[in-house]
Amino acid sequence: MSAARTSRALAAALTATAMLLTGCTGASETAPDDALGAPAGHTNDITESTDGLDDVPEDLLPYYEQEITWRDCGVSGYQCATLNAPLNYDAVDPAEDVQLAVSRIRAVGPAEERLGALLVNPGGPGSSAVDFLQNHAGTGFPAEVRARYDIVAVDPRGTGGSEPVECLDDAAMDAFTLVDRTPDDDAEIDALTNALIDFAESCRERSGRLLEHISTTEAARDLDLVRAVLGEERLNYYGASYGTHLGAVYADLFPHRSGRLVLDAGVDPRLDTLTTDLMQAAGFEAALHEFVIDCVGHEDCPILSIDDIADLLDALDADPLPTGEDRPLTESLATTAIARALYSETVWPRLREALTPAVAVALDIEELRTEDFDEGASAAPGAPLLRLADEYHRRDAVGAYGTVNFAFPAIGCLDRPADLTTPEDVLAALDTFEEMAPTFGRDFAWSSLLCGVWPVEATGEPGPVRAAGADPILVIGTTRDPATPYAWSESLADQLESAVLLTLDGDGHGAYGTDGCVDAAVNAHLIEGLQPEPGTTCP
Image 1 (tube, rainbow, N blue to C red):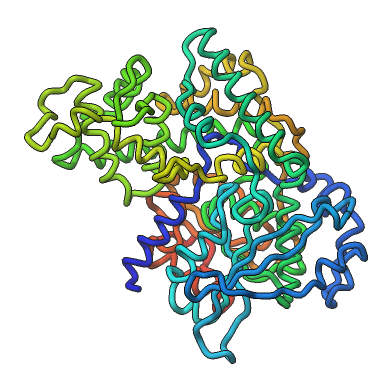
Image 2: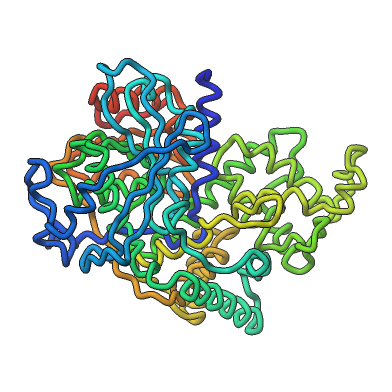
């Protein structure tokens, strides 16, 4: 695969797997600054021993010593397996075991040059690492990395093939995505609040105790189990977006087991939920400004300024556009569509194209109705933006939704307490959100209420990660990343004692595979164990 095609494939993968819009991103369960070390409840579980399984508690030995049986996945070149993990690491009961889905593609280079296994995670939380491997990383990672490593993925518990969280059925999800996420009056506030409560309760009813045990800390402990079963002395790992948080928590729990870690598009585990949501809203707002600046330089741009985007959303709030389906394009769906396109510059041309019929009809701009504006666009002007929103929600052609819609809040709401727990809390915070992000602020503020009504109490708290004693860790941040603001990567690199920060001066979410300078640094880290000089900026 050419370098250009590799870049596009990885950028598309990160875009398709990053799900940070609702703002319940996971956070660390590590202790605060004055009590660094293993999380509460695990103080005596982990020692600094590196001798085989000497530091594994006796009740976990059967899991660490289990054998892995690889089978054909039905996808050419890939193997799959299933491993057992305890539902509750603090009260192990084999009758409650979680089944973890694992997949790999073998290193293509000579056996004597093999460096071991490289585990990958694309983020979310809730995205399938196995899908990421089989659709992108297994063939899209640079050839020199694939030659030296078996690329391995494990779906975190509650996601993908690892006993995914279940909530609303597809028809109910269609209705849920149509709910107005920026209510204007008491009736709309009640409708949104009830919809969020119904969503949360459906997760409890259909997923049961699983909701209590899908935290990032538990997923990180699963990674160590997988590492041991694979026969790897240390974990080599690439994680993007939320995957950086998972990797950082792993390094904090198991610094003596951490190998060559790459954390791309960092998440800051020290932030509380409110600060996280505000910064993400501002990040998407900044990305929208960059899109508009780029858009107005193209002849096919249907807008003159960011005010036109605001006018479009206001018009859709009052009068949704037809799409040719029984799902009209609402303000909420249009906001989701725009956010989906902001994850990568490669999607900006599609957003320009999708905005054109919507703006032409909703804002009644006659000059946009060119000879190419056919009857289909006139009859279903909201259809192109609806398709972008469906991509974000992983809604396929037959109307089935991806389970990431459910795992995302389930993991995030467990990892960190909500700060906005009532409609009154949201109303009090609206001015701050709108000041930080005039376009996206209200949507972010009201969406954060889902964690406020979540039926399972959070088990994690905001807190730093140190990973004292871990091998060097490479953190990558992109200066205009909409979903994980650059400041988060700076903070994550500052917290991790052995981290080096690599900066990409650019747009988009996730850097590896989008820039040759970044790729060279990541490859050197993974293959040679070399890190860039502190302060290095690409391109």
